[in-house]
Length: 257
Image (tube, rainbow, N blue to C red):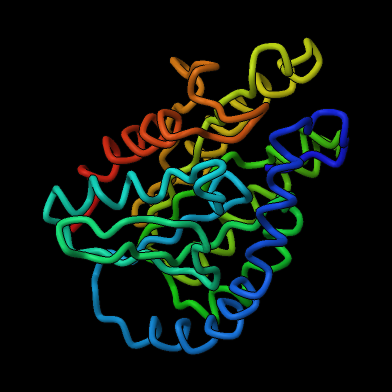
C-alpha cells in the first residue's frame, strides 16, 4: 500500500526513491521478460497455482521493506508442497536460494494500487499469467482507505474481484485478509474506525461469497499485529513478513492438494 500524502513518508521513503532509481534499468529488464515468463505459466501443470494479489505489501521492495511471499514460499518448500506462485509481476528484490531452490518470484502486487485498479487490471492479468487455484488477497481496500476514497467503492470492488475470480475458476479458493493495521502513531481514530469497518465487512463478504465449490476464507492479520512488525508506517519488515506468512500457511495447509 502507498500513500499519496507525502508527509507520511519521511526518511524511509526517501530511501525508496533512491533505491528505485538504482534499480531502474534492472526493473525495465524484468518488465521486458514478464511476457515470456507469463507464457510459461500457461503451460504449467502444477496443481496448486497460487496468485498473491494486492498492492505494495504483496510487491515488497527488499532489502528496504518486505513482502510476505518469500517467507511463505520457504514455509511451503519446508512443507514439501507442490505449488507455483503465478502473476504478471516479477520480484526485483534480493532473496537467497533456499534448500538449493531459487525463489519463485511471480506475483500480482503493484504498489499504490486501489481495489478499483486491481479490478480493472485483473482480467488481463489472468489472461497473461494463467488461472490460479488459490488467490491470496492482501489488504483488500487498504489503499482506498489510506487515500480517503469512497468506502462504498471498496465493498463493491472487493465483491466484484471475487466474482471475477469465481467466474474464471468456479473451484477457486480465495484467502482474503482482514488487513493488518499501520503503525500505532500513524493510525488516526478515523483511519482506525475505517479499518475496523473493513474487517467486519470483509468477514461478511467471505461468508456470503463462499459456495459449495469455491471457498472464500478470511484470515485475521489484524489481531496480534505489532508496531515491531513494520518497517515504516504501513510496510512490513522481516518480522512482519514472517507474521503474515505464518498466518497464510496455517490456512494453506488445510486447502492445498
